[in-house]
Amino acid sequence: MKDDVCIRNLEKDFNGFKAVNNLSLRVKHGEIYGLLGPNGAGKTTAIRILCGLLRPSSGEAYVLGTKVPDPGVAQNIGYMPQELALYRNLTVHENLAFYGEVFGLSKRQIETREQALLKLVDLETSKNLLVDELSGGMQHRISLACTLLHEPQVLFLDEPTVGVDPDLRASFWRYFEELRDAGITMLITTHYMDEARHCDRIGFMRGGRLIAEGSARELLELTHTDSLEGAFLVYSRTEGLQ
Amino acid sequence: MNASRAFAVTKRVLRDLKNDRRQLALIFIAPLLVISIFGVAFTGSVKDVRVVVVNGDTGVGNSSLSDKIISNFDTSVLNVAYANSESDAVGQVQNGSASAAIVFPSHFTQSVVARASGQTSVAPANTTITLLADKSNPNVSDPIIATVNTAVAQTIQGLGRQAPASVDSSNAVYGANAQFIDFFAPGIICIAVWQLTTLLTLISFVGERTSGTLFRLLASPLKESELVVGYAVAFGIIGIAQSAVLLSAAVILFHVTIVGDVLLAFGVIALLAIVSEGLGIMLSSFARREAQAIQFLPIVVLPAFLLSGVFWPIQAIPEWLRPVSYVLPTTYAVEAVRSVILRGWGLDKIYPDVIALLIFAGVFLVLATILLRRRE
Ligand SMILES: Nc1ncnc2c1ncn2[C@@H]1O[C@H](COP(=O)(O)OP(=O)(O)O)[C@@H](O)[C@H]1O
Ligand SMILES: [Mg+2]
Image 1 (cartoon, rainbow over the protein chains, first blue to last red):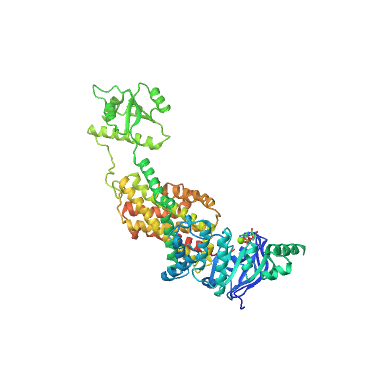
Image 2: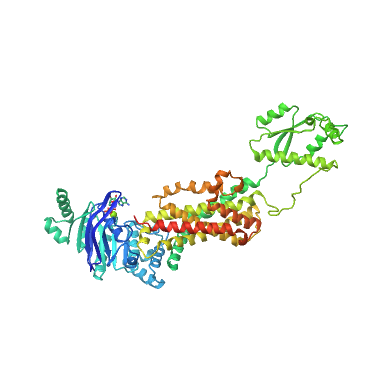
């Protein structure tokens, strides 16, 4: 069990509907793994199981070697929910400070990391604005900052770039690559297929199943397509034939 | 249980409130409005009620007992008009222009004098004043009846005669100068705190669920119990602030008298706020949207408003409904706060109510934690 994230034959049943169906995958230490698939593929459900928010119906999931759900891993994971998960009536600083305190950071730690993160997401001047007053893109950046504040080892980012303009998306991915180079493991979901070329490995998900897995280059070569979107369609079609 | 994480939640809830004018108004202005409306509506005693007198009394010589009684009517309560016939007077009551007809029989003075001097042959009808009131509103008819009774008693006393027995109620065990508002103000304060705390917790928690913040928290080291306790402390503080504002308003605007220890009353109200907070969190797990949460409100508010002894005591509630009263936390809070404020009771006397509230708080907080801990 060397890998930071390990899912084996995972199933999640919602009243007879299998949102995740026999899913197995591994994310190596220091790797960006992109989970790709259309809406309803089961990406969020898989991530919620990994973060301990849902219980698997069968199969198992391990994070940093611990079988989840387990409160013990919380300190080391960073979860960016698909929803922004910010307090709109609180300022940027108040949000960051709150999440920092929840993770047991000292006032000093919160201050220095807040400064660094706000600089990173280019929102240093918005520190004392209410989240409600920020634009959607700014809120996304704050949401990411809240996820990173406690310096987690494994990141679960659920559609971090949805509704984010292309410039910002590019800088998000640049930042994710920097984090990876610093040894952080990431599982990122997206339904924008083409931005997944930044991932080290990609898993295509559809109907709760993993229908293909590999690096962007492998997937393109195997399907003889020039876009991940095209590759997804090929796998999607062949899976339908089976 | 990590106190600093729970306290982070408390701070978060209070900050949220500080930054949101709408919520602040809901917490402080709405209950002030409510207590003012109730205060104004209920402190005004019945005044200037039009009654129609039919005085057929011929008197004895030039003295008329009926005139004396009428002159003893409290004219701040009764606005006296006259009619010549009973049917005319009753007609005025029927068409709503008067609230009661008061009819003196024709040989009233003569018959009363005769009866007083020991004659037993006097027909009771001749010594009876007939009061035909519109009793559809007892709040109006009761004071009319009381005023007429008082006037009769005063008149008889004025004649130098003593009733064979009498009641003196001028001294009080509790509430010497109490008005009705003194009785219901503590209840209104409790209900306001109960209702608003439940509502605010419900809205906050449904918000935590829909905005995703709850997911972030449940994936963090924060324990569900810390979240519940953090919220409880915040709403306990808010409950105290609310009741301080409300009680001040009651004292300043309506001269409600505080006999007992205000801090003890605040403590009880804070406990009630914690119970409501637990309830709000529990209810929030059954609502997906804010609009659904609001639908729970009548269920929370109405029984508490009607059945926890705010306006009439539990003893006045039909026996078959009383079990409902006893499962309402507000019943115990209203009773305790009223006893402290109005009777000056201490913890040594209100402890049964406090224990009941502690049990409610314990059970609700544990249930709220269990519901949060549940994983689909
Ligand atoms: N709590 C739930 N109850 C019932 N069905 C659910 C629940 N959560 C998700 N689903 C269903 O499971 C499927 C997968 O959802 P989700 O994991 O959110 O997909 P994705 O994130 O890939 O868009 C969807 O069809 C969704 O409707
Ligand atoms: Mg999703």
